[in-house]
Each structure stands twice: as structure tokens, then as C-alpha cells.
Image (cartoon, rainbow, N blue to C red):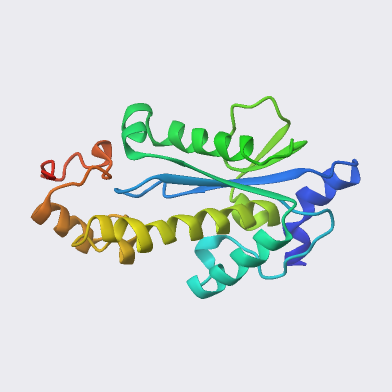
Length: 208
């Protein structure tokens, strides 16, 4: 029954003859460090991915496996990122919406309907905002997995090497005790979100 629920929004759209239904989600909204990353995924009509769920509810190993499966099965998929300087300028909600918009525009096919996790996207495409959408819609859950795996890999493979000493590969930029202590010891990097650091006594790290 749970799986049926995860396809209830899609099934209703498919029954109306729509075949290009895109799930859209973002990750990294609450982080102190790094880009906010969004993904859009269009899955084939009728495809059931039993294990797909909100990316936060499944293990890293399972996410990596499902990421490969989703990429393989999707009719189209796209990822977009908005960097910290823009987040500081326009605020995190607008930056998240911008990343989602860019992800949709990057799909390569024109979606007929968007299923979005609790947001609206500034595009002239029919869309449904679903609260807790990453748990209730298979398409949104798939997008959440693609976005999370993409961002986690950036943290582990790119950003951690760029800015060692902060533990980015471990906490992924969230405001853990370790991360906050590293900020106090080392100061913020250019990839830290200044607007998120108010109240933390930190100074710009000088990079040469």
C-alpha cells in the first residue's frame, strides 16, 4: 500500500495522458557551507522503484545504488547548483527555487507537469507542491536521491580536498559541533554562507 501511495500523484497525471512528469527536489538548504543542489527527474510511465524513498531515510550505500538505477531508468534527469555567494545575496529559499528552476530547464525534454517538494517553481508549467513530497511521491524521492548523492560526492571528493580541516566529507556542511569548532579555529572559507554564520564569531579565512 505504501508503494501505491508513492505513485498516487503520478498515476493521476498518467491517467490523464501525461507522460513527462518531473519530480523536483533540493538538498543542502540547512547547510552552513557549499552549494544548494537541486535535481529534476522524469521516470517512465508505470515504472515502480520499490526502494525509492526520501533520501534522508535511506543509507548512503543504498542511496548510491538507487542513484545508479534512477539515472539508468529515467527518461531525463538534470542537476543544478546555486553557490553560497548567490545564497547570501537572494536568501536560501530563493536560491533553492532557482536551483530547482535550473534543474527543470536542464532536463532536455519539456515536462508536462512538475511534482515539487513543498515549493513553487517560477516556470510556466503546471505543477503540484506536495508537503513531504520526498516521502509521498516516487518522482520527488528519486530527485531527492539524485540531488543528495550529487551533493554528498561534491563534499567528499571536491570540497573536502579544497578546504581540509573542516570535516566537510563527514558532516556535509551542516552545522555540527565539529564544524562549528573548525569555523572558530580556522575562520570561514569562500564556500561558507555568510548569512548563515551570524552569531558565530568567525572571520574570513585569508587564502593565498
